[in-house]
Image (spheres, rainbow over the protein chains, first blue to last red):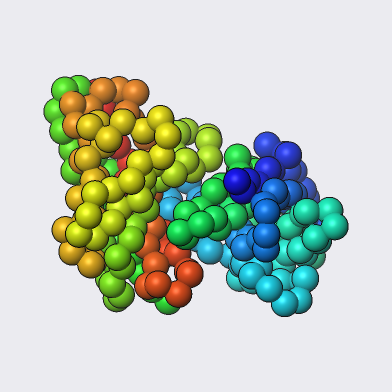
Length: 112
Length: 114
């Protein structure tokens, strides 16, 4: 079985400061990991994914994520947060047959 | 990139009625589509896998007679919530992929049962 966990329900950061949204995973075999962002009453927007290769993955809107196999983590990061980054962020893992399993979500609040 | 659409984007229905939600892949064919459900302030939970030309497969705990899925063509899957009740109110999201391992998510459908 595969799963992801997001330990923080909410992350607060000031605009211009770096942000980190945490995600850990559990899987037997190689993980296929994703980050999505969701704005209120909207669908999911793809940010980035890790399939293989470099541990540092760069994605949309200046976001990046670092895959750490020893810590089974895939934390989402951004060097300088924007107020417009405030949204709900989901970590996900792709399982067999292209099924996706999502974390519980982390609400990011960026304050001006 | 590939686009998945859903219709309607929101729907209000009365308790006891049925409502159909459509999921379409606009620029690719998909033999498999997925339906997810999201409760307010909660995560997405996989409900079922929609298979073109065959029966859908449901995740544990999802009532197949309650949530009818029909994958009528390679670009269309429908989810019908039968005899809807207020507890069925939720945000329903579908996903589909062109077969290369990628999945694209629809914009979601907000269902409110009164």
